[in-house]
Amino acid sequence: MIGRGKIWLYAGISENLKLVIDYGFYSVNTELMSISLTENVLSADNQQGTRRFGETPQRLNAKYPSEKEITNKEAILLGILYTDGCLSKKSKNCWRFYVSNTSYEIIQTFKDCMINLFKLEPNRVRISQKLVNGRPFYKAVVDSGLYGSYLTSRYGTFRTLAFKKEDGKKVYPPAKLPFDRHTNLNLISRFLRAAFSCDGGVNLYIGRSKQGYKFLIRNVYLACNHPQLQTDYHRLLKLLSIKSKIIVRDRKILVQGKNNLDKFRKKISFLNGVKITQHSAYWQGWEKNKVLNLALASYGRANSIFNLSKFKDNDIVRSS
Image (cartoon, rainbow, N blue to C red; front, side):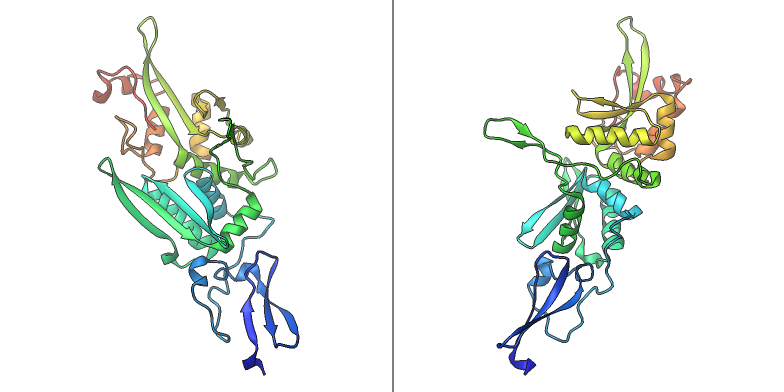
């Protein structure tokens, strides 16, 4: 009599998905599988087709990371999502991951994290590019109801920009970084490396005092509008014994001084290959790590920067 009954998957957000078998006279609920094993059920792409009874569901071996632990890949993914990434509702049962950057290395890192963490097929990460001011700009998109629901239920919102109320006042969403003093410091380092690679940079510029003396200003910064996240980033850097300042006016977290920059290089640094954007007239296209090395090497050797041909006729030079 099974052939006359109805069989479907309940696609709600719950601890377990149920196979509901309705014979017409009564219903029986039997546990089908853990929600962590059914990535395709909540994906909008996969809901376009209905799996026939008896077929093997895809990605049965895909599992969530342990609820008590954050993996290295998850820490890196979070660093991207809180900065250059976005996780928003696409439809009732589907979330969209979106990342955009001028460095392809960021896009590739995001793709690697999604594949390794959630066991996605590579073609689920859709990458495209366009030219902006004559230079490539990349974006990556993944649609997944299950993993979007997992991350938002575990970490809350990833939105960092303020909402505008009717009276014009700004209200920031309740975002908060999911790390504290009990977190493994290696995970904090990986998270900050991704965050600084996306929304951060290294400054190396020549200033001039009122008396006409030239001097070098060297620092690493992270751009952040959200007041709570500014405090959180400052706290995480402190856990790594790196002193920083919150520059409220500029909406940045600043790391400066030889000792702190050296600690930043040793404990955090930038993702390999990530380059300085076209906003820099002089360091554009340079790897951020290389400019950081130049800044540190210039202590006690300021003339090595002053004498560079690109700086000869410029009092202030910035990289971002």
